[in-house]
Figure 1 (cartoon, rainbow, N blue to C red):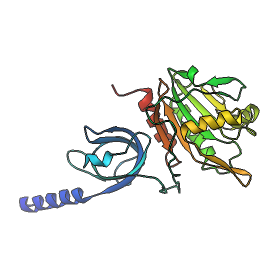
Figure 2: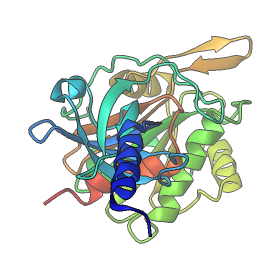
Figure 3: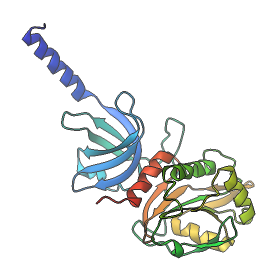
Figure 4: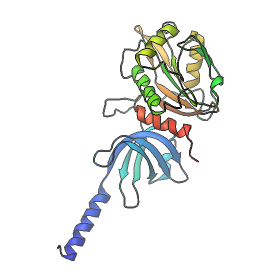
Length: 278
């Protein structure tokens, strides 16, 4: 048995080492509670500390939460404490690379702000049926933007893969109180038949998931509402990336820019809107 003085000395040293430990991570913001100085994050795995999960963290200074909201990708530093883990440094990610070489595109100012109602629109889906936003009131709607000829696997195909994770997470809610809208900004090429074949490749021709196109003017109007920019570039289309989540009243609740987040994190964020905090 160790002498009492030696034991206490080792215990104090161990606690000091723990207090000095810092862990860096990044994640997708799900909720912000400024009154409680806390933020809920769906974060990546933190090597040597915890796996990828959803966690509520206290922040050292509530001013760190200024300008932070659901859908933001943030990097942060954790300090483990005996009374709970706390964030002592947090910043928005605008153009950073992740472990997989992912980058964020610069944020685009949307015409419609968070909390506002998205203007109604009607486009044609892969079954050649009209789909209006107004007809989806009462459901949570996730809107994304792609074009089927996109040659980069980490852009449009990644958007569809993230939405596939939503389909897998909420199979009993898709088509009922959850709807996915994937809008093509290449309407001259992406006809309903082309979009049907594209969706088939991803197993996405399922109830509640609509791949939409329409006239160039109609598509441009929808993209403008969400702040999407796109332009021809040597036979392809250069574009910004965004995934938006609308609540049951048609209000924009969250908008996630770029591709620096996973399908799991997106599903966590959608879950907070499908099942709000009591």
